[in-house]
Image 1: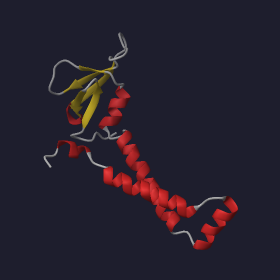
Image 2: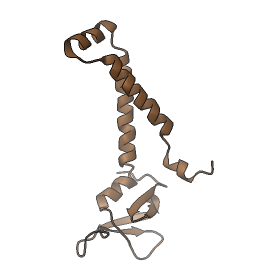
Image 3: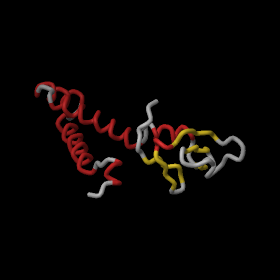
Image 4: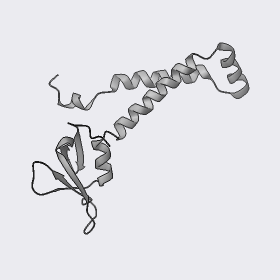
Amino acid sequence: MEIVPGRMIYLGYGRYWRSDEIVGLLPIEEGRGPGRRTEVYVATREDPVVASRSEQTILNAMAGVDEMSRSAEALAAVGSLAEELGELPAVLRRMLKREGGFDVDMWARRMGALRSGASEAAGTQEDLFSDG
């Protein structure tokens, strides 16, 4: 698993740490509970930071496998599917609508609107920290 450098990783309760400064994750076994899931070892501190998130959740965020990346992946799949549907011959579109009740044009429009709406609202994590 490759760690994405420079990402701000949410540790819970309003605490964030840079992904490239995290050097170790240790699940808390004794005394584990709400607010105490993982000890996060960072390069700039001697004592670990106690995180309220699990080690796997933190590791996934460090590698870029989080809700944002899954959403981007799903959006890309929707875009590809919309393009493929747009290339179907008119006769096949009519057959699908008449015989199967599947309206190719309506779905292509919906997916296109979803894709264009998401691209307008989409930003990157770097946008949070830029001056512009």
